[in-house]
Figure (tube, rainbow, N blue to C red):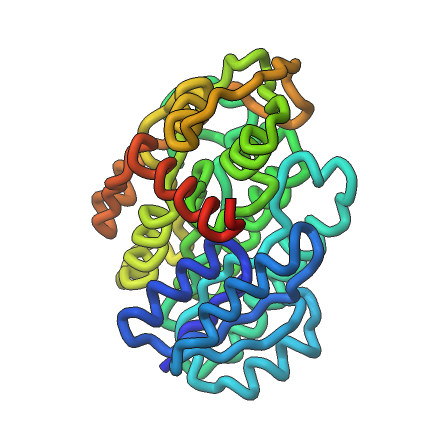
Length: 324
């Protein structure tokens, strides 16, 4: 039996594939390897995965119905799907909106239809985002809260994906679980994320952009904790009698000041940052904070990595990978 991991060349997809391979799973990875950010980083991740006997890779766009139909025909042993392929980034959605609807909505729909044709589907896990909470002010964010006020197209597509999965779960009794990720960081991270941007600019002696004049708080979640949540969730599909479409928060359950996060980066680098304070960006929110009680109860999710441990691990990888 095999696990299909979409977005396998991406940050979370790469680490999730590694974790699955490490425990003996057969993994079919798929990724279109687009140029949203440095393709060489994606290729380096894939090279690491290619070292594992149980890994096979298909370069394809999940929104391509023909390509995905052929992929599922070639890999008839797929019984579990972890859909981590997505067009990420709040700010880029202001520039290239159609990339978001194509990957995050149409791509998901293509996968759901393909999954319906499987002889056996044990679980379909997909990535959502804390961005769906939009203008909510109640903290911590709970999956019981209404999420009707997205403030970016990215958030709207993630909310749409949850609604589509709810409909498919209801109509076809498919075991579907969405995971709302909270500010993921760590080794092999994306270059458009805060830790990466800050480290690169500090080392180059350039000012770092800090929005909302530094009055930001995030539930920073280390990649190993995210992956532990994804894999444990995959192992615990909805049981008989449960709603077949569920949604959980996967975060560190600790809202940290952005300035404290920058302080950890400075300590790990042994350098002080020059800060350029800027106003809030369109589509952004001042604070995120995950209520993870349901994930802990239902599949034992317990994050273990504070930023004081996670940030130095990221900086250590960054220095080694880029020879800085």
